[in-house]
Length: 309
Image 1: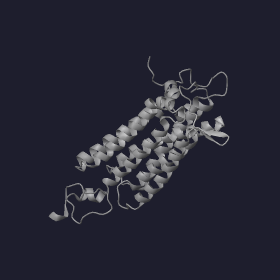
Image 2: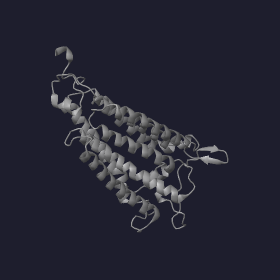
Image 3: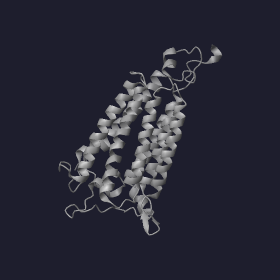
Image 4: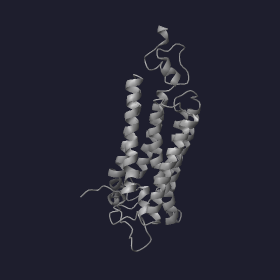
């Protein structure tokens, strides 16, 4: 039987923000019995279910602040503002994650609001990443009102659309997205799993073509591939290893801790990749002036070296 559109197995074995939207206080919708409930650690008279994720998300926000500062110093780099927008979205995503899967919120309504925001910003952030790859081709001048306006307009539409579906699922405003016993929700399955996957694959393909065919580079591919690998490892921890890790740790931690860690490492590596193919200053007479004018590092790409000038 196909599992398309169904979240039951995911929610049973993993800690995902989207699963909070399927929780109901009504006896007509009994809560899901987890394979291994995430109990977390004692904190005075209470327990914090996911303190490791909370700490890592705080580190993620601080890291984004540093990367934003480093990006600001690369005045002529291609897609500088667009990359900064992606980083800001990732920081907002990390803040939402603190509340959606941190395991300390007691109000189900508040938890659903943060979870819906988390789901919406995940989809929007992946879209922003794909747009960053498109910006690299210089179809539009990066950093301009038109470029940033398209970022904001398209991202806002995706955020509002996904957020509405998530909230309607959680609160049943229209009864159009009420999940069944299998937690089936085709709209959220597409926007939470399939659409982000398409955006991530699209980014990798477009950037690979840019680096290998346009820039004639190979070294940046190690960073791009490393970022993809780190992200994939994080997803494996979430969807495959999580329940086994939780059982081994008696419910103190699960795969969400490592998913957060490896996603942070993937974002750092991704920024390093972007930085490696852009530069602030260039030699006076590059072999390919158009690429230099666009902000790409023609000196380190191997097409020109000052010793031959």
